[in-house]
Amino acid sequence: MEVTGILISEREINKRVNSLARRISRDYAGKYIIVLCILNGAFMFASDLVKKIKVPLEIDFISLSSYSGMESSEEIVVDFTSRVSLKNKHVLIVEDIVDTGLTAKYLLECIGDKQPASIKFCSLLDKPSRRKVDVKIDYIGFTIEDIFVVGYGMDYENEYRNLTNIHGCKGEIEWT
Ligand code: IMP
Image (cartoon, rainbow, N blue to C red; front, side, top):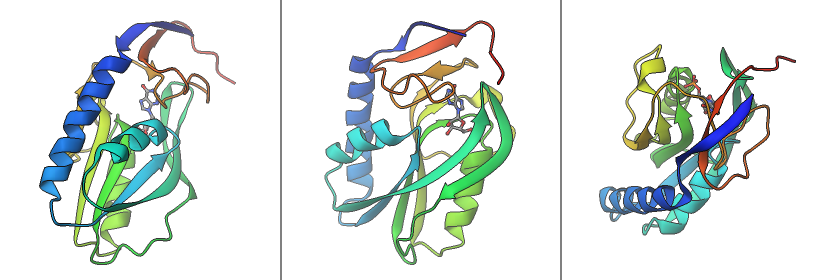
């Protein structure tokens, strides 16, 4: 597996995060948000995003995994979940990437069961060509083609999360 050139630069990410944060701040004006960051992939995006949101908020974390190598395993493993009460709260889920849509569907269902006042989904990246289930994403940073990406929080076998730009990958996958 080889990490190729920059697909989305740090500068473009920064610009887009600012504009998403402005929209979110407008949409939630006068409200209090519970931001749920989906670990591990969304940690950098959520961190940058909340710094720019201008309404009061709380941030909490849910740790999920659904990928093995470059393929979605289609099995979602919950490592830990938020213990914040979500009843009657405005919940904004922040994810790194929506691929098959299975994780987003699962999250929307689980969190929907906790009777929040509202629930919205924000994803830095969207790969619509890979979708297996229909999900509504309220805020999308960038729509990309069917390409495996790393950097800015996203990994391949837990590596490359610290790259500041988003890169595409190509080549043989080493299955372990
Ligand atoms: P989904 O359930 O198939 O939509 O997968 C969502 C999760 O798969 C994301 O939160 C990522 O953690 C992971 N994922 C999907 N595509 C990529 C990618 O291109 N690079 C890194 N992780 C990815």
